Picture 1: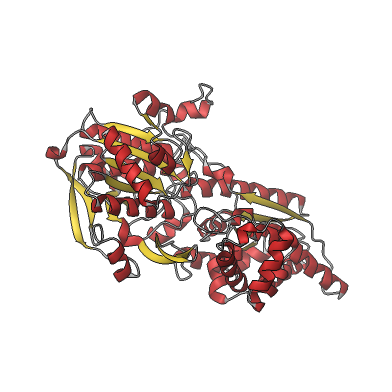
Picture 2 (picture 1 turned 30 degrees about the vertical axis):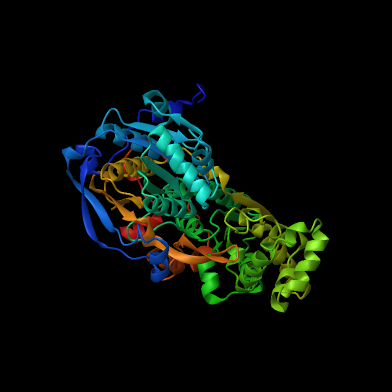
Length: 550
């Protein structure tokens, strides 16, 4: 780690994250109270068949001290997938928790994500290393990666590497796909009777890894506060200059939690929620017409400016685009497609293979968007929606429609636009007090799950709108969150993503206010994250969490 640190980083190094009372008082050696057997969220017979050794495990909750559980453990940890604020505190909490089980416990960090497990690339942690990274953003302590653990050869290497190192527990810090990997590895290790516990930890700034037992994925709080500050700054500028419409794309490829949270925090003139688009069956043209109508209304009131929030994954929720992309995914999974060298060859192949409606949807898009849709898929077979410039697409289409209206004397305003994409700006920010506490608690809870001899679980900390000492630590079986989804042309077991619920309190709060926000200038300016000061300013949870759980 660099020795050049900022004054804020130096001050944050002394921050002591808060823990649930049971862990704060007794360390990781706590009793695991078990609930009833559980079932998967869907496709129960299929998931039970695929995971016979880890299906149906009970939910566990930690409450009382259990001194006899104390013994030394050797554990490995990986950071998997995209970065999220607080990852270093997960590792710090895991390290500290293991040391409460025994000062002889060892924690190893496997480098570069899941590939480090397979390639046996690791480092041993000690107090000096951990202390240098407490309360810092990023994943640079050991790096991350997106290698998917899915083959028998990979699993055998992981088990052999861990056995040679004396590691009997692995903690996988990641999102839904990474925790799916954890579930599959836990099942394989059980089947092989390997001495290896596997624990997951819920990470993703997208906020789509949550349920009744996982109230929030870590990093969502910090990232949305960073984006909220930036959006607020832009809105202050828009309200000052009064001449630009700002189209702001926000991360969130499979769900619109980030866009919704940022809307609740900043009160933009228009915010698209992808789940609502899908539910109402809105076409791309209808969305464009709605935005253009708002631009027209505000122009008539002398307001030729505003802000529009666009979720990253919008294009996959528009019905005609979703069908077209699903067909594209199947075509691009074909080996023949990958032999085509030029865009023209690919376009011709696609035009001949897509259904007529999908061909029409594809050809209605500008050439730049068509080419972006034909880019290589991510390791999970998904369109890389962050590379699709949806905000620019909307600007172009809205501008075209307004020019048409102007010719017909329906519109006489001015439409000048700016486009933005906020993603990487929030992924490695210094964690908010909430995320610093939550991540530390998740890591400490993972150590407790290791100490309780559990495998196939994900770390769970609940009651997050209450003070941290009142949080409830425990674990839920990974199979509990599983369902079958179509990936690379096959049905695969994966953890089900949590989408925005249109009957949920956060969306209802947004829906009740958006008309007023659209027509008036009700911009809210959240400002930067506050790390020092009164609790009501520094320890706030997200509006989403407050509305869902408060």
